[in-house]
Length: 281
Image (cartoon, rainbow, N blue to C red; front, side, top):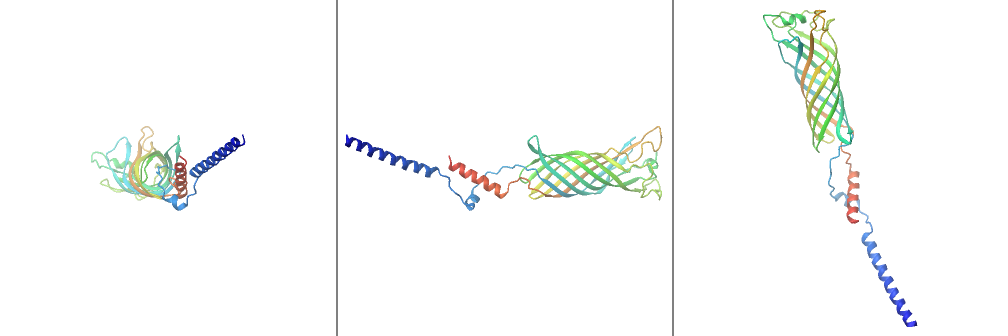
């Protein structure tokens, strides 16, 4: 009986030792390891583009063509406008869980104007102080809603919104009709409107070299404020004249905050999660 008990104890001790050895081996096998920052820096993490909520400030310069939407209609040529520049602020953010939207505001110094086609049968320019051509200096403040699609180094954009402005000055030029009155050649008259407002929109593309972005835009601006009082010639027959501009511009912008949020610390964290996740499987 004693011999039987002794055998049982020996077998139990052997089984216990084997179990402890196996558990130790398993523990060592699945124990988390500590990796150095140098090693984690070498781990390749598949990066996906996640556009962050970020802000952009920049300067923009453009040139284009201008004319007037006349009612009643009048024959005219397009006027080349070499001045359209300003500063913009853009706030990118998510809407409906999608990072494709932004609000853009700016302050611009711009020009707009008109040029009649001379018609010998009727003097169109007589109704505007003898001027065949006029250029107006305008202060413009646009507020635009933007939709954009991004890749790592490229972006396409479309935007639309409103603008408010003020006509700072005017320069009238004579043509075949004779001369412009000296007192109105560089001055507004009482029937001119100086408050400006309307709609604006456009499309564009950008080259992105974080934190710098270079934007190229084509925009259209249509004023809803006539350049003169509609009843300036007659209380019974109204006339309207709404400026229209087509502008091609380029701008350089600086990212105030990070565009994607992929800092070195964030990438290192992703690498650590990737390594530990592989080791744990």
